[in-house]
Image (cartoon, rainbow, N blue to C red; front, side):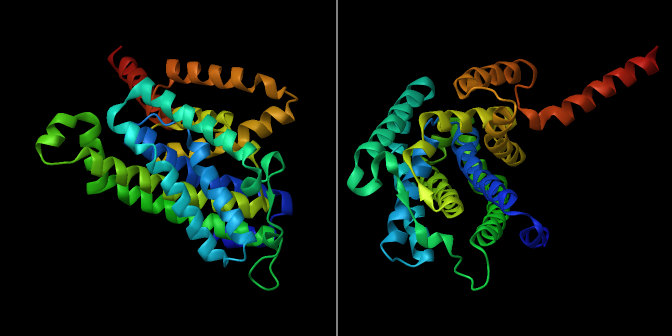
Length: 308
């Protein structure tokens, strides 16, 4: 209901920013499924989203109906993610991070160089998306409404998923892999399913990002964007639905804040590094743990005051 009301009252710029925020809620949930719940350090989240974004743009320009084009995007992001599941079977930690980072660089190179499909540095315009499929409705309002509803649905689905048998299975494989194997849990099966699911969720986010701008280019799916998503999850809260939502605010809000403050884009990596250091030092479980931390300290202070 709130999303529907906001759709009618927000101005165009706010609608666009809101659509971007909802899209990154979905994308950060996908990234946290791998990074947090499955304990897989994947530094190619932007590439996974990019697979779906380019697939959606090409499909729509080819005249494929919007819903089918969205399914193409979801499938391609899922395939891109599954490709990373195989090295994840043998590699962990830093080694997996390096492999996935190389995958991200390869994607960026292909997006810039494969001009016949991706348009190279010029990207792909999807002019038909400037018109909403709902008669009488502006495209910006349509995509805001769709993005908001999908973000809510994905949050609810993820909450149910990680609290159910699937989430408990991931926790077992993450925390006690030998015991999980002894119980008959096949790592290959679980990793393939997890990476495919995370990729599918990223594909939903990709559709929303392209719908928002009616455009896709290599500059939106870079190594820097993958790093920003990862850092945002660490700062927001690893293995947390709420942390993923906070991460989306960081991904969307941090560049806007730095721009408003007149901070050079070249300093962004430095600020990101400082954010990680500060978070790991004072909030190792992310911003999501801050209320609990404050509550515990207040209880200690109250207990000391009562004892004295």
